[in-house]
Image 1 (cartoon, rainbow, N blue to C red):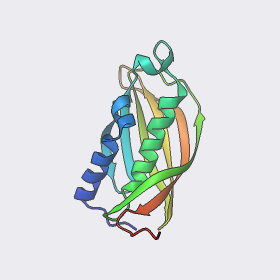
Image 2: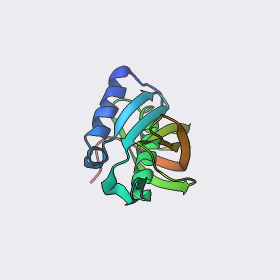
Image 3: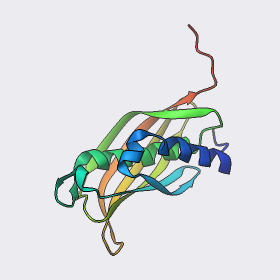
Image 4: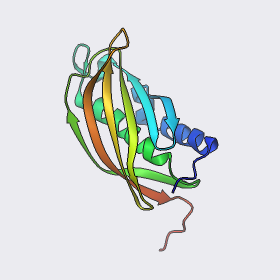
Length: 149
């Protein structure tokens, strides 16, 4: 399905960053290319369960955004996608100054795209340590298709 253009990648970023959850988390893209996405969020105290350590919800959220954004980067113009399944494994503490998630496509199909992401805790000096891994499935939707009623 790869028909990615710089314009479609910019549109994908715009769609993702317009989501209230993305705005609440302070989500930002640091890289986006066909089949890959890298995003960051700050470690914000309102999302912690103890000072300086994020609760699992924002960890899942950034992993999901990264994986599904990577999947969306391969869609043709006029298509969108949505998570239909995801499994996360938390493997280390989510603490530091930020979380960085790297999403990638595993298998892109017309209807479904299997995607994954690794989430890293980023320390004040920029060192990364793996804190979670996610495997997900996104449903690809032709937003231009007429619905049958």
